[in-house]
Structures are given as C-alpha cells and as structure tokens.
Image 1 (cartoon, one colour):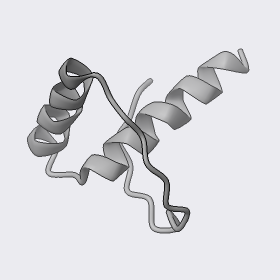
Image 2 (tube, rainbow, N blue to C red):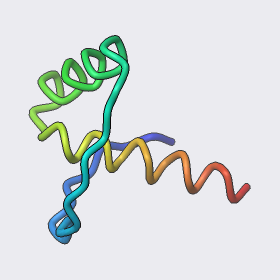
Image 3 (cartoon, helix red, strand yellow):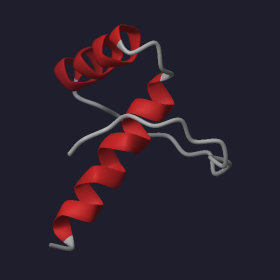
Image 4 (cartoon, helix red, strand yellow):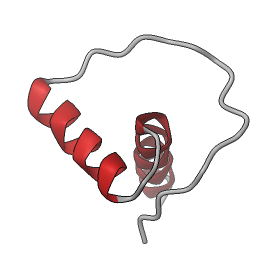
Length: 54
C-alpha cells in the first residue's frame, strides 16, 4: 500500500524536470498531506521501486 513518509536522510541533491500535470498533482498531494514536495516524490519513487521487485 502506498504511504507518504517523512525522510530525514535525503542528502543527495539533483534536478528533475516534471511534466506540468505531474508536478501539479504532486504539489496537491503534498499540500493535502501537509508534507514537503520532496517527501512525496521520494515516497512515490520508493513505492515504484519496491513494486518493480515483485
């Protein structure tokens, strides 16, 4: 199940370009869940990576 978590050890900086619609959706999710945009993106990526392993 997808769950947005807080990540404290996010110390590698990078730049990612999002399509505008995906960016807007991620921003909405972050605001709705009172989370940072970064935590939402990391949670989504972590969930996708774990799903790929199945």
